[in-house]
Image (tube, rainbow, N blue to C red; front, side, top):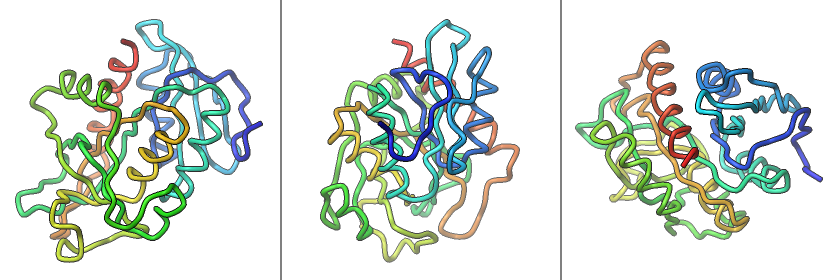
Length: 224
């Protein structure tokens, strides 16, 4: 039985993972014909239903930070989830980074101590599922570029303190990829730059538009 989630509707084998419960509702309304709330326990809103293409899909909030995401993913595995795409936000660390940019995670680096809970030492890297990554690359085309992301236990973080290879920083991707690998769930991630290291932030409306675009791409990829 799941530890944290209390599903009220059947879950699909394919899922989109978001940190923010509000974003799970946003994507459920965008992607599902008749979304049913499959979970509301602990504020981790989840929705399940059929996409406009007729495929079963679950959209599940994972909360804030890696530990929360790892626990939710373990519950999703018990409930039959086999593939997942994380649709998240991040801080752009590169000088040319801009709010609203879409980043495909080619590799995630453990930059926080909590990564030890998913079997990673600080500085260790974990890749996404290569099949999902390639399908996302094709689906998004030139709208997204593949980068290395570092996951920290807390944000904000300054570029000077991040691993040199990291183009962006977030709080969940390394845990989601590593825990997915342990559980046998194929996982990939696309991140939206919601702020830059220089303090430039993306407004709510364009952030929602970007989340919908990435959600549509993730849904298309999971339908194949």
